[in-house]
Amino acid sequence: MEGFFQILVYGYGNPGREDDGLGIELVKQLEEWSKKSGMQGIDFDSNYQLNIEDAEAISAKDVVVFIDASTEDIEDFILTEVTGESDVSFTTHAASPGYIVKLCADLFGKCPRVFLLHIKGYQWEFKEGLSEPAQNNLHKALEFMKEYLINLHNEGG
Image 1 (cartoon, rainbow, N blue to C red):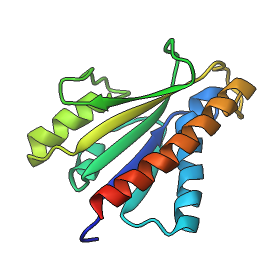
Image 2: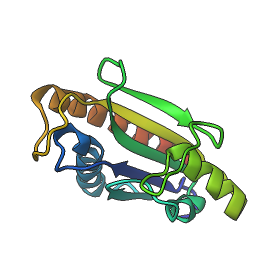
Image 3: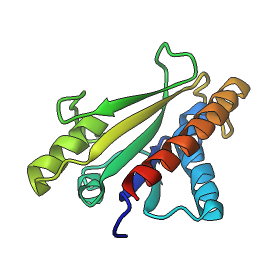
């Protein structure tokens, strides 16, 4: 889509572990909102975890927002920038957003603007469904992301 930023919103986590599903649920709600709003240039994806193949997926984008549940000492959510130097870790089970950015730059010579939306979670048992405080944080993050994506859309258009 010429004229618009190419944006990827990518949530990850395990919906079978209560609040760990925050990222996936937010992507689901944003995708529904985007379709109703007629927003262009935004792709949505989700998975249990980031994988090295995601470096290719982000290489074709101008802006990427990863979304994950967080145990950090934050009030409800926070958006931080991710670079190839940010928490660059990889195990056989998971890759950090920083590792994906670094891999994208190393393999494809591209570096989109990448952010991580951390949403505060509280309960992590093997059970589906979000806790009530996590649902409140999800709602706040949803409203923030709608405005954020509209602003990005206008900036790129």
